[in-house]
Image 1 (cartoon, rainbow, N blue to C red):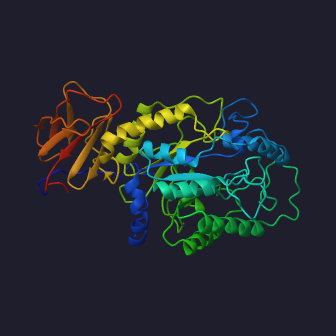
Image 2: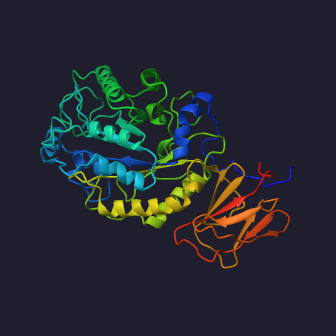
Amino acid sequence: MRRGLILLASMAALSCPVSAAVDADLARRAAWWTEARFGMFIHWGVYAVPADSTLLNGSRGAAEWYLTNKRMPIDDYRRFAARFNPVRYDAAQWVKIARQAGMRYIIITSKHHDGFCLWDSALTDWSISKATPFQRDALRELSRECRRQGMPLGYYYSIMDWSHPDYLPRRAWDTRPAEGADFERYVQYMKGQVRELIEGYGPVRVLWFDGEWEDTWTHERGVDLYNYVRNLAPDILINNRVDKGRKGMQGMTCEGDFRGDFGTPEQEVPPEGFPDGRLWESCITINHTWGYAENDTDWKSSTQLIRLLCDVAGKGGNLLLNVGPKADGTFPEAITERLLEMGRWLQANGEAIYGTSAGMLKGLPEGVRCTRRGSTLYLHVFEWPEEGLTIRGVSALPVRARVLATGEEIPVARVGRTGIRVARPSETDPAVTVVRLDIGSGLR
């Protein structure tokens, strides 16, 4: 065994044991994305008008599923469009907040399951520019602003469409007759809309599909759609929900010849990441719902969110953190406050997040994560023991240890044959303190 620090990465806890190596083409296309590590997810639509995340029985649901939660006829749901007038929508402010939060890309719902479109699609009147008093093209404004501020932009697009007359299957309470509906015609409609987005609202860096789980969507259709998009935009990234390989909320594609460039864990972080090299991105809400809900104010704290980002990065993934704007076009104040607090932390500690890979996955105390950049390790410490941190699995002392935010040099001592003890700094961050360990040439 070579002298140096050994990274011990357990494979035992992987729920998808099949390796899916990243080929050279995907590595090239995803280089900016793995560098970014942190993105903003935006769920916005007419469901922001009722702003209600409860089901008919009063239990918790998701606000963007309002039509289904309330088992509402399509025509009744469409009446919310007359009240969707986001006069305070400011694309420049949205992108500015994302930048101030330290986010490096944005994914926004171009069309969610209700079929409502946030752009001026030539293929439907069920859109923000035609069905609402706002009559502006929200995605046109956002795409222009992202180009101006240098923010990569991608679009969420739902394969499932509760309102389109050709989409099947119907909801159980939907009284519209299914006779005459033609799913193939719907697929052509969907492809036409995807082409509109790629050709008119770019550059589109990511297409983030969803709603692929119903039986009318097949593996063959997923392969066809993936190839269709790549032909239109060869350098684009496409998530694994374009096909049928995703395993529930765990979000990863397992065995099988399924398409998709990265996995999509939802509301969870894989216990040990995926040391076999698969790309993944955890999408997570700040409260419990994706769309805005007045009755859901159970916000994660900024400390929880910063620790979440460190957890994801320490396991080699990206964090796509959700914002649900209000019907007037503004972000809830509680969300903006938390995002700005994350941004302040990243100003001091971003070196330990952006462009890093998973560090040590074993030998760390509880409440510590680790990222890596070359021969440097970053310890993300949630709670500091008074006696300092003991790290196992290290066969060489770091040549230098310092607190990233303050520059304070801290002592490191040998503990046994393969351990080190990192002294507690004089000042610690109540959210996460990052310690940079420079190992030198011994790291492998």
